[in-house]
Image 1: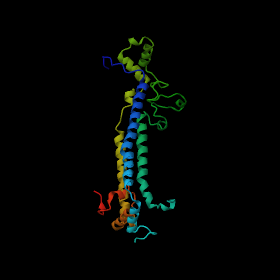
Image 2: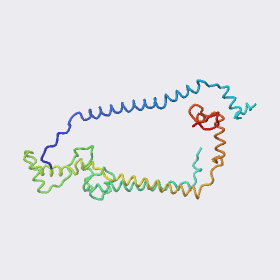
Image 3: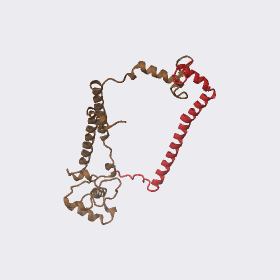
Image 4: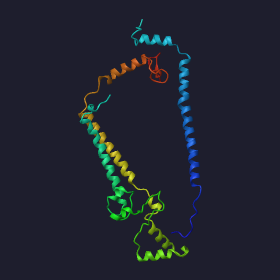
Length: 77
Length: 195
């Protein structure tokens, strides 16, 4: 047993300290996850769909598919 | 839909390593509980690892427990004090500043079995657990290899490379998933995969 006194540990507001730490962390984590998803997944996906449909010609696409022979009711010419 | 009769008896071979692992962990956990108790009593497997000898009539009396969430158990750890300890308990009734450090430690040890530091000490059990898990996963892998080689029949012809390439070509012709999926990775002008 050491003869020198140990520093007095924190006796009060232990839950408050823990709660503050965890609330802060939880808020940051959840906002971070949401932001990551938005900028990593949602926005690129929206951009990809916008790009695809910007110059999309459905009839041209249909003729290409028909030529490949995938339709039963619309055989290739 | 999968029915019970679709599982053959041979498929149940895969369950054996899982049962063996379950048995292994029951043994490891019960060994851990027994190690903590001082006497080999069956009661120590049921109660939260209460220390000390438990006679039949002591069941109804409050017991000492070494638990993090019970800082002050109902009874002291040492029930039957020696003459020296009895004298110390008498001295405790007087001013505590008269007690030496060793006497204070002795009083603590009378009241409690382990300090919080001793109670919360880590162990090397995780190595055993991890090793056991990996070992039994390996055994399962070996069983699966044996099954594939000796037991199962050939896979359907639709998994052959020729069929798969015909299948992929048809998917591209149908423009499956043209925005983000497979057809978006195909270059229709050059008739090859996009770089």
